[in-house]
Length: 223
Image (cartoon, rainbow, N blue to C red; front, side):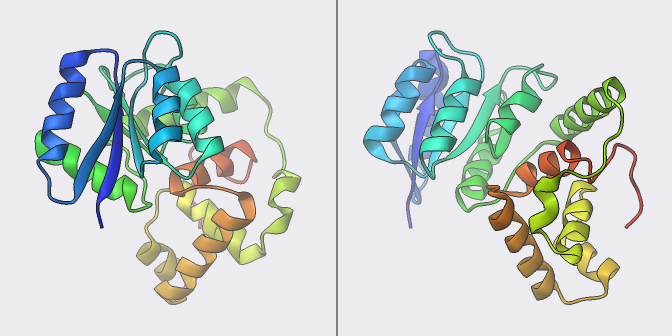
């Protein structure tokens, strides 16, 4: 199966470089390029790609707003690009629906791997971006009083809520299975139910939901 990709970046050389790398792969095809967020949205609507490689800072419409529109209107997955790993917009980009985050100086092999991983339905965050995300949660938690878990979570069973809390701690399915003393298959079912019931795309969105609803708090280490 070929992964169809749209590349959106306001720098033509960056677009050309990424396009050349990805098009050289037997299982990846770049179907369109865009120079700003509005063009990116139009390209996704016209070509229906599997993945949008999207610069976070662009003219006309920035990557965050473009990601929000694309994720709301289609099943296309979004992989964000930025020049700095401490970009102030990391949290907002992920909250808008992005499933991954990469630095523009990413190595060739890592770029190809990231596209395949995100297109396959998984999420991808570099350690530095994960650190930034947790720091953002922490600062926001300090800025507001703690609240009981949101009614939004009422659709989840107790086991599903526990699974969501462990996802927020960064545990893998195998680690969750070991902690809950169940099979990995059962955990996968719980994870799938969590994502479906809460209308989430992937584990990144699940982490955000866990913190925003009060189910998880910064520094939480209990299972």
